[in-house]
Image (tube, rainbow, N blue to C red):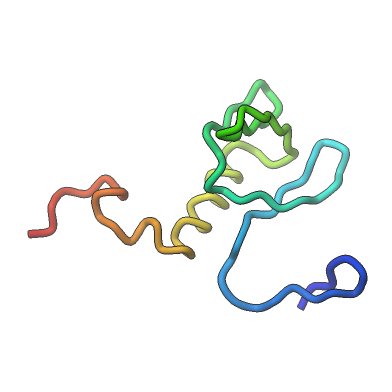
Length: 89
């Protein structure tokens, strides 16, 4: 188990956010539901639904993989229509 701030421990269970790193090396967590776009300028820039922009060390592909894993974990991608699949009938 990971140690967090002030000796608190991360709880096991579903992923509640994605872990990223700012350009200054400081790690932080972000709720992926608030991500509107992920672009490379060449630095990876995440734009939130609030308009806030965050630049991270991870590549655009790494951020997309983390977001996809987050969505699968919270079962957003369990709906075939959201996955882009045809009707399952």
